[in-house]
Image (cartoon, rainbow, N blue to C red):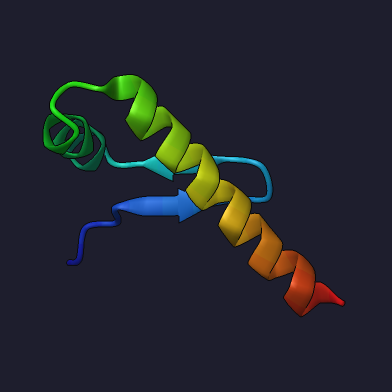
Length: 54
């Protein structure tokens, strides 16, 4: 069975812990950068759903 890595709801981004910590490692520990990137990703997905809902 495939492992679910990310779930996007209307106002939340639920992300696998391994995926999150790998992103922090890739950012050399800059968790604030990763937080900003995740917020931007959520906003982008929300924007896509708003466009498709029109």
